[in-house]
Image 1 (tube, one colour):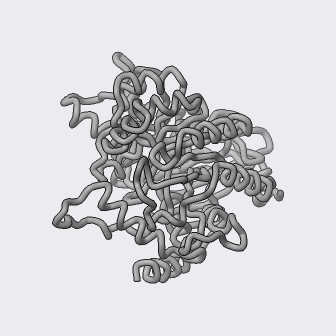
Image 2 (cartoon, rainbow, N blue to C red):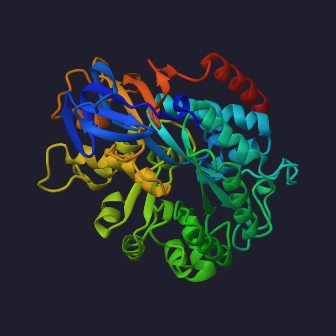
Image 3 (spheres, rainbow, N blue to C red):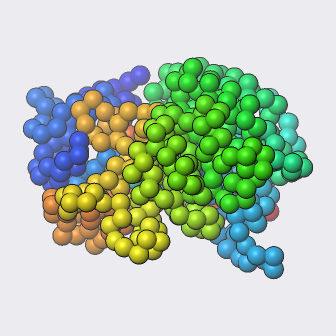
Length: 468
């Protein structure tokens, strides 16, 4: 570990506005050292002072759920077959692409995605990883080959990454094996647990890499697998992520097999708790909402993907009222814009409920809605991944974004409406610099670590191979 790599030297960044620890300050410094926030307010004594006029500093954003390889099907599914277009027809295209992704291709495409994230102000990525085997369904010489490639891609860019190692046992209840899933399948939940243990040992010297367990869904995992993985996650004190109630058919099939909804099944399996993140949770009953709330679970909404796939709308207002926590994810990477996800979370509810400011606290401050949405996109994601931070409070990770107040999208923003301007109006062009653990990964809107032309060129070649 070196000072140059991990930000050991104390540095005080002084923007025009600083949004940290839940407060917008004018002319205050964010002092960092050893990859952490050490002080807010006046610069720490002895710190190198970096003045950033015409800018604002905000906490870094977090994509708590994503599948990097699915970037390969961006723009390739916007058609309507004679039989109709829905989630299930989209999935067939995704399976076909998944069958053709090699290790080098995965690295190149994932690196492109993570570069796009960094340039959009994302500092941490949760990668729900279920591409394990080779195209024939056989293990690589290194059984963790593809997981390592995804991790390497994120670390090349400079992002913090939580690899959520997914388990996949079957095609579904009374459904025949689907050849498109051969790269996902494994014999038992022990395989995932052993993989996480191996990977955690391999990356123990990198504080920006962490792991979690992820039964893919109650469709893909029998209840015994879900229970076993939940126990192992608790034992290892790592997050447990699972797709839940994304599609009506998923709910119907779960009821046919178990007599209960997916969320209720997770509760019965001992898989709902503060470590749990239920991804999507769209088609949920009031009983499901109550179960998610009383367990202290997180729901990770992925509104741009959910809109793209026609999944439905996450009832975020009901979930928050019940006590559940929320996070956001870029999921299929049809778009990579975490503030866009935050806007869509609220915007979809406005269309559904026929009213404005649905997620705002009644009688709260004028920027309470924006603060809540930003917290969901930052601290909410960190909590979902079992990580501390997301607010830039002293002691937290120095993961932050410097945005230009001269960008046309937020020009004229003041301390009073900064957060609202950023959440509801800021374009990605406003992102100037991005720091992870106090180290710059984006400078002046470009990667601080990589030659972007090389990243794009290698990704384009990989996409050409994958798509044939």
